[in-house]
Length: 309
Ligand code: MLT
Ligand code: MN
Ligand code: ZN
Image (tube, rainbow, N blue to C red; front, side, top):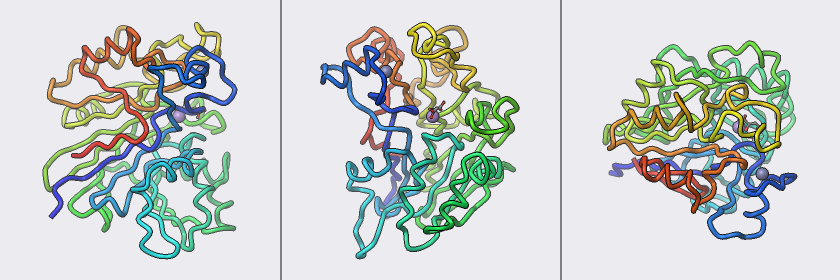
């Protein structure tokens, strides 16, 4: 009887990927040129399994086809037409987390899709992927309630998922962009009931409120928002005009930043950053910011990483 469950990182980058197609910042230029100490990353997605055959996919990245080619574990090939993706769960309705759904349209049966009513609503209106997929495989919608109930799947025995509303922002295309609702963004605690071990995953997190903090404290592994190092990173590097917090991402450095918060967790908690924007200096494996993370016991997730818990 398998004790562990496995979380695979399919893509550890934020929207745009690393390198980003149109970006010539020092990080993107460097990784494109094959500079040592820089590793390419695809856009945000992870998957969870017990048997490494059937997987719960978290988010469907625009890079999903590349990710599936790179990660043979997700292609068990048990039949002529087959995939290891048993169901999809969305953390939000951001483009980098949902547009890969279109690439799954060749399925023979409707795609089981778990998301909050807020996210399903955005995907029926502002970005109408759900009606659109109705012309292909179709989507079997499973509205995800934030009432404290846990989710379970037959292909993930003795495991449960506890979702939690996060304070962040709905996507720029959403009519709710400036009036966020609980359910626009969620975090999830994955619980392996055979070992009692827990992993907390939240790739988009603007604020660590009491409920999030409780989930982080209870977790053996935290895998959280690593988008930006500083709040004014995009502005200072002349890549954009918006601050990290305005975009719904808590920066790592500075007072109240992610590092300060992670430092309050026990030393035994495994701490990883994910959803890294290409502008983030932590992408430089030989840089001072990465050294600061290492000293604090914080890892930077990369594509292909597998976390057993
Ligand atoms: C975000 O989470 O803010 C996104 O990565 C933005 C995007 O996908 O363009
Ligand atoms: Mn994103
Ligand atoms: Zn760049």
